[in-house]
Length: 376
Image: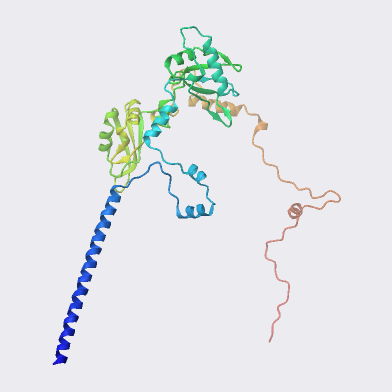
């Protein structure tokens, strides 16, 4: 009986131990869940509170960090190579603050002119002007731009001033002498006197004509598509489109004949004509074959007169020139080449001369003179 009681007690103790272990496991899992939820909340809060410093420089790479620890990396040089990016607002304000809307252009400068010479010239000359004009002080000149090429100035400069009245007073100094040259001064925003570029040369490399060359066409393009596309440019007389012999499709280019030169010119200027069937077109002036020099046609000969350009006149001139030729001018037979067979004393005869004068072997059949030997 005592043994049976002991086994029951052991079973109870074992069950109690198992319950305790289960409770401990459940507590640990609950604690881990609470910790993970807290960590998730922290990460979410960190993400929400994340701030980016736009003024900060470019972060160093691992290699650069190792070089920095060894003292082999210069941070100042690296910052100059990779400066911090600036915002668009700051760039606009800098450009606006750097250049003034009021300024003058000064030309015909001597190549040894400096910025100090220009400032001294403007300040000194404006002081002598009448009282109605504004006197320019050195502080009024905000910027002096002297463009240079190969270490020398190009012969002109831009000077920025605070107001339009200052500009008018400086323009009055035009034709004044500086370093032995009379200066030309005008408003920096005025482009009068500049040579106007030929607009037709910019439109096309070929001379203007009434024919328009259209390139980079799609193979599915038809003449009706071209007519509809270029109808707004002018009156179209004919469309010549290059096609394949087997399929009849477009080869990729065409010529459009307009009534006058205004048609191709408007097509080259129009933005609507630059694209067809989602393909950018290449437009040029074509060659007008009707403007070529015509072939020499027979001209009417007036009685008693023969024009020099007529074919009859040409025949007579040929006959006349043939009759007037002297007998010595007739074709002479070419002289035979002679070889000097006797060389000068002490000189060897040339191989070419020796071969030319050597006896030639006969090509005839020579009869045999030997005896035929037979063996029994």
